[in-house]
Length: 144
Image (cartoon, rainbow, N blue to C red):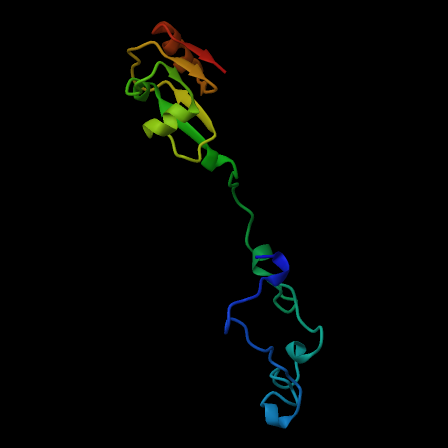
């Protein structure tokens, strides 16, 4: 197979509709555009959201709030959840395999919620001040 031999399957394509080619075609005279008006003219169309000069909806409504594009890639893990992880050296991949964070998570932060009963080493994972203190009190450390 070569790139210059690739073509659509039999019957997958059909001839383009030829408008304005006489009365017998069914699309003669106005060419399927109806009579008069902006939409019947060549080049006579408007951009999306245009309301004929009326103030468009997206400009009439007040601007409010903010939606972060990075929010889906951030995740939090409780201190108590680290007790359930089998290994002592914990990174993002280990947390994904344990099912503690989503598969698309890129940034993970440990928060001080619950108790930590074993020494763990965090690699490439951030921690809050309280969580970091609790991890170091349990004999572990945080390597960012």
